[in-house]
Length: 255
Image (cartoon, rainbow, N blue to C red; front, top):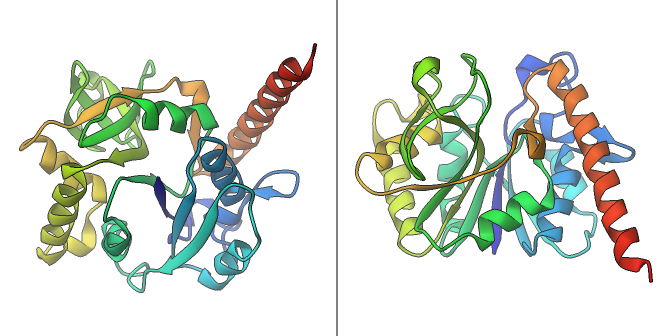
């Protein structure tokens, strides 16, 4: 299993923290930044290869990826359009990496290893999007409408009163879903609006043409880093997940 991580953005809503440091290198633990945590949890879930799409301060990310990491190999792929286009361009830059089953995720999504394991081990589906429910949704949430487990709509502009969940920025493509997504991304980038749209706009359009399945994760099993307050929450979440993992290891080791 290969993961593609979209980490090209600067994270301007986190300024001044991201003035010289990309969002994916912000610290979330002792000697651990966002990308460190993502790669460690992917490895713990059995993902053996990760391709990190870079852009802002790419050299700093590339330097970090030179360090060997247990259980996973990681390398970078530069998106030259990161400063003038939205994240669809990062997916387009990585299409050459999407030739077989692939996990696609945002560079600011943090999670515990069981989240990835649950997605990978779910019944096979061409496209499966991870979603999470909560009591209320705001304008910045990537909201979704569902029909059972089927994804019907996804977008930030959906009426918050009519949505069922939000996308956490993680999805898995298998078999025919890989080629279907590649073709849809290519067509979207050729369109006049291609430089201005999110890759989830492609998922929304595909949901109108073919069945896209979802898997669900609890709110306490993931978080994202968009604003300074999110960084504090992310650090708390990583500390909680780390403590949980340590407790599980201690339990297994006990006679």
